[in-house]
Image (cartoon, rainbow, N blue to C red; front, side, top):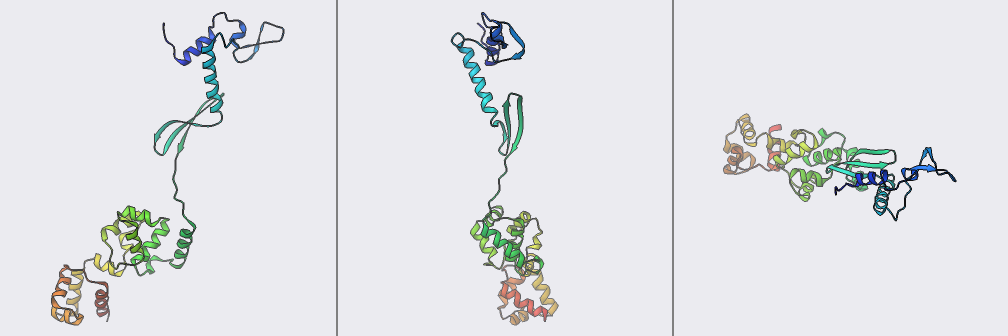
Length: 254
C-alpha cells in the first residue's frame, strides 16, 4: 500500500471518498432540494465518524489558517538580524523580511551631560587637553564610555580616568583605535604635550638645545637637572614629564 503525505491524503479523501454524494464535493444544497447549487461553494460535508482521518486533517488545516490570519510566523531565520516571516490567509501566503535592530537606551543624565558639555565646548580646536577632546567627540558620536573602552581594548574604569584627565600622556596605539571609532584624525585628539611626544621627544629636545646654542651640560644646568637625566631625554630613553616639557616650552618661547 502506497503511503501518502498529508496534502495528498487530504486531496484524496476530499475528492474521491467512497460513496460520495454531490454534497461531499462541496456544492451547496438548497433546502428541500437534493440537487447541488452550482453557484455557491461551501465547506465539505461528510460524516466525521466515518472519516476520522479526513476530520483530523481538516481540523489541522483549519487551525493553521485561523492562527495565521491573526499573526506572522518565522519561516526562515537567515541570520541573527534578518528573519523571513510568513503569513497564511484565505487569500494566499505572504512572505516578508524582518530586520532586527538594537538601540542603546540613553539615560536622561547622559543626554543632559552631553548637551551641557557640547554647549560649553563648541570648538574642539580650542580645547587644551586630550581629555576634553575625547569627551567632545564621544558625545558628538553619541557613544557611551563603555563602548569606546571596549573598542579600544581597555576597561571602562581606565577610559573614564583618561576622560577625567587623570593622566598627562596617552598611549598612541589606544588613541589610534579611538580616533578610528570616532571618525577623526589621531592629531585631532592630541593636546600640545601629547603632540610633542607623538612627533618624537628626542629630536625635538635636541633641535631646541641646538637652536639655543647650548651644550647638553649647559642646557641641563639651565633646566636644573643632572646631565645624565637630560641625556636620557635627548636619546628618548626616558619620557619627559609634562611639567618639564612646560618648562622647556617656556624657555623656547622667551
